[in-house]
Structure formats: structure tokens, C-alpha cells
Image (cartoon, rainbow, N blue to C red; front, side, top):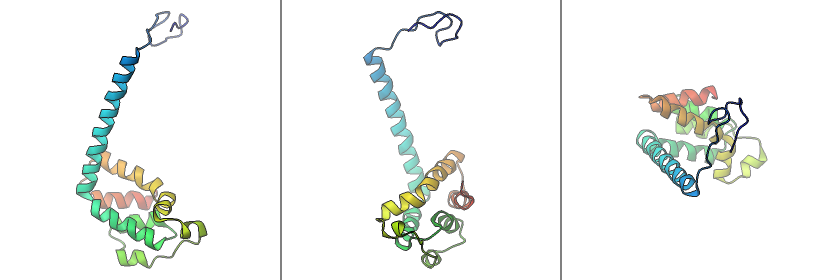
Length: 142
């Protein structure tokens, strides 16, 4: 692929960059997939060791109760401000679609959009206060 002179292409002005071969593309894709799998495995291990069981319990409580403010409630629970019993007594959502949705759909539509980035943020921070930091992030809604 030739770039017009002076446009600062990756190869420099007017320098032709050869197209990668199919084998080079496949090798690069395999390397990226392997790197992604390794990072995902490290994150899963980190979460299993730090909050795995507690996270499952709280997600299950949310799915059973269907609270109006699921993310805030989850944050309060992780921050130690709400117990599972208090989660169960939280006001339910008034949205009929969320009330009747299967548990996974309810969680996907209420908390996953906030929980996933919060999990990544705490992991990247390398926090020693994993549970409370996760709660703080979720309560802030970021």
C-alpha cells in the first residue's frame, strides 16, 4: 500500500509498506488471543480468591428481590452498609419488564453495566481492600 508523499504514513512519506501474509495475520491473531486468555484467567483467579463467593451471594440476592436501585444496593452491601437481610427488604423495582425477566436478564439490565467496569477498576488498582473498594465504586455509580 503506497501512501502519498508527505502524509506521514506508517512507513514514512512515500514508502511502501508490504501487506502482511495470511500466515503473519494468523500468527498475530493467535498471539493476541493467547494474551487475552491469560489476562482473563488472571482476572478470574483474582476475583475468585477475593470476592467470588460473596459476589455470587449478593448477585443471587439481587436477582431474587429485584430492587429498584440494584447498583447502589450492591455497593452498600460490599461497603458493609447493608446485610443480605437488608438487601432482601429493599424496595422492589416498579418496572414490570424487570420484575418478570429471568434472573440473568434482570442482572444484565440493572447491574452488569456498572459492575463489570468496577471489577476491572479494582483489579487494575491492585487494591488490598477489594470488597470495600468495589462497594465504594458501585455506590458512586462509576
